Length: 220
Image (cartoon, rainbow, N blue to C red; front, side, top):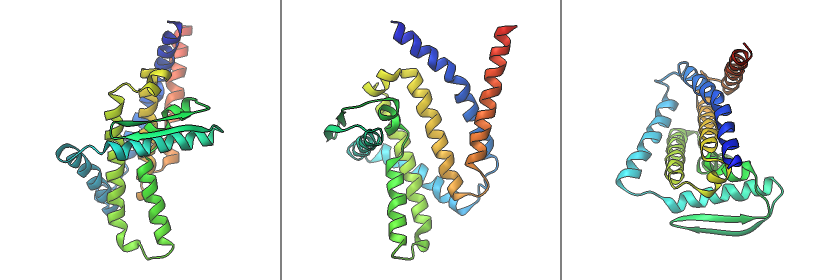
């Protein structure tokens, strides 16, 4: 019981960061050139995936594969060992010798499929002139990011054990902040009008101001 209360308190304490990152994200979008060709291709891909998702299929196997691969990479980064790895059309599971917050939640905010597209493009560009396919590539990145976000929401509806163990409310808030941060980072790669560093600084400053105001109010 104490553990559940503690997790709720941590989640409540984290809310100023959620508010601040959202504010910084929306302010950053104001500086975007919305008729920028790269931005339009990215947005096009982002909004095509939901149509594909609703009309055709929900590619759970592809998502589950990426989800569990991120678990594996996180386990290795943290010095653990994978003892079992299973994937099906219903989902997947990974067992390991080690677990922590990063290992449990990283698949929900690391868009592995978009990252693999970046890697593929970079490898092909070493051997071929890929610039003529840049628009199509950006479209696929938008498609992959949308796929990641929508499928993440789909699996989170099932109240995943990873999320419940960390605390559902805190996990949802942390995943939200991580995802909008990564989305802003992706936008900063295709547009010189926005800066991820500026986004991070604003999030920190706004969060600090909210915490300061809260603590000042408690002391008066």
